[in-house]
Image (tube, rainbow over all chains, first blue to last red; front, side, top):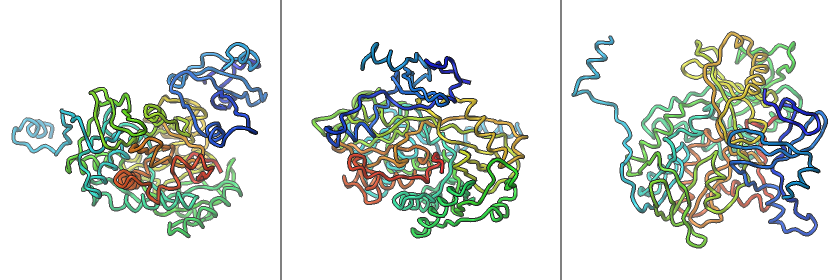
Length: 90
Length: 413
């Protein structure tokens, strides 16, 4: 069983979590171009290395940020969104 | 008998089976360079040589031939998809597969088994009817059968109602088939090399050389190679290679795990798939039960094995086939899949001139090998997107014209 550390619930089985994809900047929906919106919706960096990702702890519906290595399947750290966006504002 | 074998082996006049010989030298320039010596890349080279008269081709691979996803699938071939675009595409692939042993003069062990997509809910029955109607309309042999017919055709399957997800019926696709994956890579390589195509394993592409918006060649671990046209056919690493060419793709890289049991006598004729239970199973020619499930729950560039996968797979498998409880798992592997938002491939022209892409091969790549080679060759030779590949162009995302392929193996219904 692979364990993920949830900032709210502590260490839990990874089956309880849902992968939500890269943390990326959301374009301004009202003013962005179609190309920017397409890029945001569909196009991926798909980085083969360390990536900051959104994860959801499904039973408690708690959303947080994890840094994970996509080559080694290693979870480097997890953070509350409030801490993440003050510590490492992307 | 061992003595006879030793005598044969030491006999200087023995005739070895013909082997493929890799050229030791690599040229400075080719008409076409293909990155990736898997089934798709080799098929593209073969059809370029046989159908378009282009033979000055190098097929490069960072590892060995046919060792990527060509060797990491479950060899299922079928055309019973949901979208008209998908059905037309895979139908051509099945037609090419049927004649492939003859065309390549190699036994690909093509074996038509019949293919069940089981339905356990009313929603899944509705999708089965939808797929059957689209298939029939396009000339693909598919029909909806009820649980009694499933039991009649496949007596080993448990269609009892006393299980968690009883079988209500199935989409039955008689042409569903299996084939020998290595034979397909080797067959295409043999045919291409006989016509002058060079295959260079152990040659990693480290950069794509461009002049303005036009590709002029590739930089490799064995030096620069110039080319008029370059094709990338590296599913699993598509984003990494396209990044070298300077553009990004709508692809997430996610592992797809599979395993085989120890071999037993023939007991299961058909290929059985359940989208709701995330299970598919068939019995190989040598008796192993070949099993797979859904893609992993998160993105990863690794073919590692997880207990979660095996637990989830076996729990459902044992309901359908209780006799499997006595079998042990023999081998396990994973393919590295290119998952797209609409479960369809990304093929054809790219933002870089003379640079062509064959990517977006999630859980549907092996069964598309011949048609990909055939149509990518046409695309490269003419420089235009073939009609059959038009729906799968990279540009569809910009025009919000996606091909929602709910008939893909990884999609629950």
